[in-house]
Image 1 (cartoon, helix red, strand yellow):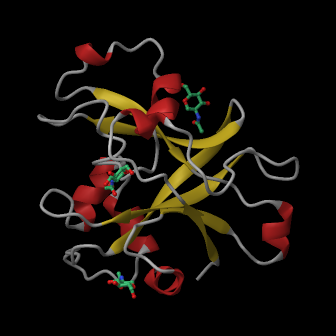
Image 2 (cartoon, rainbow, N blue to C red; image 1 turned 120 degrees about the vertical axis):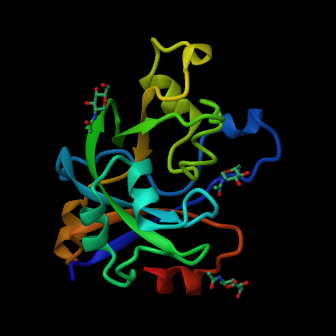
Length: 189
Ligand SMILES: *[C@@H]1O[C@H](CO)[C@@H](O)[C@H](O)[C@H]1NC(C)=O
Ligand SMILES: *[C@@H]1O[C@H](CO)[C@@H](O)[C@H](O)[C@H]1NC(C)=O
Ligand SMILES: *[C@@H]1O[C@H](CO)[C@@H](O)[C@H](O)[C@H]1NC(C)=O
């Protein structure tokens, strides 16, 4: 199994909508001179019933094949069922855009989805509204209908030379959950 290094991504907890627009703290998703411009990376998704409680429905959120997610998560049972809160690694293609790494994910809007809320709900804060709005400048959010495919840029990163030298082949983005502590995060994946 290749070594995957977790990028712990800390968000300001916010109780109102406006503060969700604040920049996030945590790892730097910018590029360093010795990092490749694209690579395979992972994001960590936490199973959340009722909609996203099995491998297939979560793979569909990110538009990736079920088999690629199975391959990255050998601990998941064959039926793909997950317990609530179980983390799943999702393989994504990470690339350098502007001055940050992002993985473009095509998300199909479901009935009841709100463009402004998708980053914090279905996408579990693996992106934020600033990044989403920057990528979709021509888009009028009120025109977004159920069934529309919208590109959401997820935070990701390619290993630097220092990572590679340390044997790290892939980086995984993990959004800090308030119930976590440092010890059980590292046990999760
Ligand atoms: C995303 O972040 C917001 C603001 O901190 C938080 O209220 C929300 O619960 C988070 N979403 C998930 C799925 O953890
Ligand atoms: C993501 O999409 C943007 C806008 O279409 C594009 O400029 C960028 O190169 C894409 N990035 C990746 C990693 O595919
Ligand atoms: C992580 O540890 C905290 C505090 O020890 C505990 O409340 C929480 O349930 C643990 N989370 C998991 C997923 O084991």
